[in-house]
Length: 410
Ligand SMILES: [Ca+2]
Ligand SMILES: [Ca+2]
Ligand SMILES: [Ca+2]
Image (tube, rainbow, N blue to C red; front, side, top):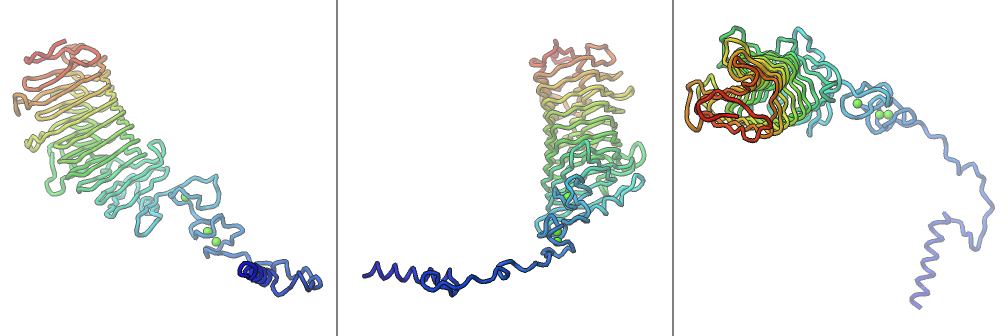
């Protein structure tokens, strides 16, 4: 009885639900007219209320997307036209979502670049174009360009670039940073004690235990006044830089890059055309002006140093100068066509009396190729070393002759 009752009951429920009051099994009704089964014409809805109906709005759930929307640098086809590219500059954070900040960046001109402070975590998206702007990064910020060949931050030869001097973790990628200069005038104004600015790395400066991960950057024609023509890594900062290029630029020490009391790890990067008026046409590793001699280290894997120059009247090191308590470790790189009329066509290792003994410095040229570097002594004098600077040339791919008294030889 139980199962049969259940079957009957189920059939009754099925009929009641599907028949809408008809009873096809026992009481056929005449067919109704067909007109009511065709839906009445619906109004063309505009669900996101952006003024564009669903029939023409390629995303009727997003009011920033419609055929007349301006393209925003957000990876979305805002104007419903796939043929137009992403454009402008946009900010994205967890609190407010996306914000188009193109106008703020467009205010910058070659004569008066804007300086923009980003003090909350988020991502700055910089689409193709030249933006006359520098950035102060006071929070965990990611700066994402469209690629170093497309997105350019330009200092107009009057302003500095990306500044990170707080204990934050940031990343920068896909940009050219060009024509940045430091802003302290005068040949002997080494240091602005009030701002700690103007002296170090005008294109990218980091200090105060900041962590910076950078890749796909081009540093072009930046001019540092004293230390680090483009990039300065100071006071506990940790920089990782990869797949990048330095082109032109100059400073007193390290025409491209200076590492002082900090650590930098560089991979697959070229250093070309740097100039130093004192030492290290491309790179300076050490601390000099504070005489604090904080440990400094640069590790460079797959780095090419080409056509860098340290001028007459300085100390030398056509490509690199390594100072007291500093480490330069190279792996599978090359020094080609660097020069100086002083000492060390490729590299100068010298404490200049600041210290001596085993803590003087360490240089490892593992797998490094030398060719065409010149100094005052001739083309074969590739590396100059003074007493107290430890070094290891045994694994370089070409023998090195040194002017020193500590057993450096071919
Ligand atoms: Ca709409
Ligand atoms: Ca829309
Ligand atoms: Ca877009």
